[in-house]
Length: 215
Image (cartoon, rainbow, N blue to C red; front, side, top):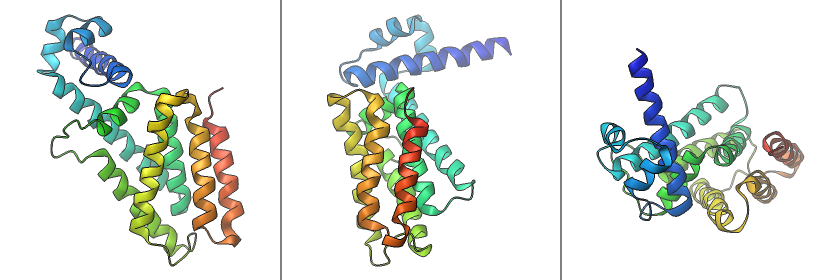
């Protein structure tokens, strides 16, 4: 049991080290030797868990997918409206991108052309499906204007959210993400939510930003 625990800890250490380097320097510019040095493990330990750098990238993408699905399930289980659940999901992902290099690396891999091996979906495809389902729910709950193009809004929202993180990565500290997520929602709410319900969701966006803003 102790040996298994040590192996799991070593694997997690290697993934975190690889993610940190992928995030900072990109997949192509990171070598396995760089990862070994950064993780403070032997080459044998790395090759015991991962046969190639591509396997490490896949592990990062799998963790990103698991985190996104877990956050989506958590927000769904709390009885929120569909729109609030979607807002909480995006703020949750923003928080994770501040705190976790694996999530940041997953974004860089997803935008850098790294191949995603089946059965794992591409992160943007998975996020688009989650967003679309919650937008459909929000329309049924009358929290969104009834005449919106759900597919178009879902695509635009994902592009907005992902694009904000990509631009921010090279222009400002990652701790700015909660503010940028709130700004995104302020724009979307004014364009999509009926006037009678806007105040509630604008207030929610401000509150969620305060909840996850770094101290």
